[in-house]
Every structure is written in structure tokens, then in C-alpha cells.
Length: 483
Image (tube, rainbow, N blue to C red; front, side):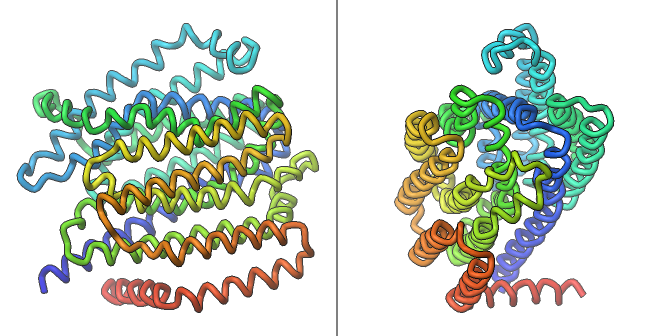
């Protein structure tokens, strides 16, 4: 009886944490989507291209400096035989990230050469410096944010996200519309928000890393765990962000900006992925020894997959209309062509995130490295071959192929290490069917697309009625207990 109550409590905590984070992430992660009308009114595609190229640079540097230790933080935090393990992990990595955070600041003299390397001009030197400062703040607040997450203090974590998002909105409006800072606007806003997040996370954690609690042997074990993740961060950058670099090299800033419109829509899917995966880490590791853990993993995977596919299919079917509403210049309209594959790529990424936990349960991160490396190589080769010939929108298709490769390898490896029935035999055909319908009907009349969309939604409800009914009953029971 006690075990049943504990399992229900764990699942309820996961549901509560995910819900809080989804709501808060709508504010933070989806800001780029909701502010698209503002961006496209005041910023040219070239300006957006510069901003997105700097984001690509940050996306390369930040995980490289993190060295996979954020994953090690989660994997080593829970240790039943050592009640002080959490404090040791926090202090050990807190001190490590304090010093690593100084590296971007020491790279200031390289800002000018970096500007010339990326943009073939020195005029963006200041923007590169702002990006480097932003990376430092990211590294400094990382241990505090991880501590809140692993303590399952999702309300505090969500509060920081909401405050940060409000600040981001205010700063973007100020810099873009009133001060007319152009391509610097979004980079400066991001840097200031990351500084605010560092202070807020530290305030909620209410403690600082202590040198006497740092454990060198623990750090060595964590480094052994994260070592295969270091090259994986490079491969992950190739998979997720190198398409912008290839577009910049062959086509220029303006096309990076057009492609960036499409990538901003993926924040809608990332709201779900980021929130669920953040809460899922604590849930998955703390629940793995329970005898019905795999059943709970099955339901979480299926519910998340259905949510992601619903968003991807809906955006794909009405991509042209959505772009028309969300952008104020005709020059951005053609970006709708990239939406379909980018959205479905995010769905595959979300699926691989959940099915890959078997790899982390067994601490066999070399399989994750193999999966993302294979996907990255395929993606990069296709980008180099196809973008110069077919234009920027084909990068969305290569991203979809890359994430498909990653999902297949991750699922195979995870099943080998930790067999679990995720219901992939049903989810996979559904994904293919919805994608094919999106391809076939993208240029058809709005009325026909609306009819097919409604029919697909009704069919999915019938096909997955047991899972949806489980979710409904669970949510109803949680609400009932709160009364």
C-alpha cells in the first residue's frame, strides 16, 4: 500500500512539475514566437540573421564549456547510501562552473577576430562580446537552476522563468522599438536576462557552493561519466545549429533570418519538451527501481508524443496562414516552407529524449555519443550538398532526417540496456502518416486542410482513447485530492 502511494506521489509530483514548467516556459521559451510581429516590423531579415548567427555561436560555446557536467549533476545527485550527496554535487560543480564562467570573459580579445570569421566584418565585435558575457552568466546560474530542479522546487523554477520572460519582453520592446538598436537588441536583452536569472536562482537556492563540501573523487567520477558527452556536445551542435552556419556561408545573413523565422516556431514544441524533460529527470531517476516504473514511462512517452505531434501537425497544416498572421512583411512569407519539417523534427527530438533514459540509467553515455554523432554527420553532409543547390528551406528536411537517425539509434541502444515498451509500434506509424498528410496537403485549399485536420484529430482520439482516458482520470484525481 505504501509503495502504491509513493508511486502515485512521484507521478503526481512529475505532473505538477511539468504543468508548472509548461506554463512558465510558454512565457520564456515561446517569447521569440509571440514577438515575431515586433521583430518583423522593425528588423530586416539581415538583422535577424546576425542575431541568429550569434545565437548559433552561443549554442556551440556554451555546451562545449559545460562539458556534459549538467547531465552528470542529475545522474550523481541521488544516492541513498549518502544523504549528503546532493550538497557535495552542488558544491563541487558550483565551484567548477564559477571558474569555467571566467573563460568567455578571458576571450574578449578574440571578439574582433571572431566577428571577422563569422560575419567577414569587425562591426559586430561588440555583439560578440555581449554574447560571451551571456555565456558566462549561463554557466554561473547553471548549478543553482539544477539544484532547484532536482529538489523538485518547480514553483520557484517556474517563477524565475516568468519573471525572466517579462523582463525579456520589456527589454526587447525597449531596444527594438524605442532605442532602435537593430541586430544588437536581442543579444543585449538575452545577456541582461541571463544576469537577472543568475541572481534569482541564487536567491531561491539560498546557499552558495562550499569549498569544504567539494569532493575531488566525486568530481573525477562525474568527469568519467561526462567525458563521452564532451564530443557529443560538438556533435549535437552540428545536428541542431550547423544548418545556420552553412546557410550563412553559402547564402548570407538574410537567409539565416528567413530560416530563423521557421526555427522560432519550434519554440512551441520546445515548451513541451523542455518542461517535461526537466521534470522527468527527477521522476525517472527516483522511480527507476519501482516495479511498475516502465508502465509509467510508457504513459509519459505516449502523452508527450501525442502532444508534440498534435502541435507539429497543426502548425504544418496551416503554416502559410500562421506566417501571414505572425509576420508583417511579405519578405518573410516564404519561410513557411521550412515549418513542417522543423516541427516534426522537434517531435522526433522529444521522443528520443524520453526513450534515451535507459542509456543514462546504465551510465552508458557512449551510446548517446554514437547516436548524435551519426545524426550530426548525416545532417552536415546533406546540408553542404543540398543547401547551395536547393536553398535555405531544405535545411529543415535535413534536420528532420538527422533527428530520425538519432531517434532510431537511441531507441535501439536504450532497449538493449533497459528494455521498456514505449508503444513505438503505434507512435511511429502515426508520425509517418501525419507527416505525409502535411506534405500532400500543404498547398491545398484551406477548407480541405481543415477537414483533414479535424478527421485526423478525431481518429487519434479513438486510436489512443485508453491513454487519453488514463490521463483524464489521473488529472481528475489530482484535482480532487487538492480540494
